[in-house]
Length: 95
Image 1 (cartoon, rainbow, N blue to C red):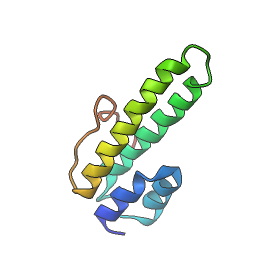
Image 2: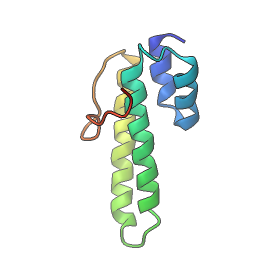
Image 3: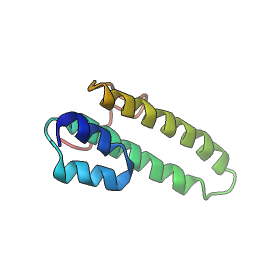
């Protein structure tokens, strides 16, 4: 897969991220692989918070925020831009 396809596939669920990481252009799409991984981790955290009573209202709002960030990241990958997602885009997991 080329850089653009790897970046797009990385945003499509955890399985898509794994496919992009192992079969795609890892060096060319490292930025989008990192951004998508941060979104996956944020989504897991929101899911765990959604189970806790009274915190689930906040988790719902955070879930909408993560969804909007996912859309922003996916659009940036389609345009082949390296645009960080708001607030959590500065987190670097992959070196």
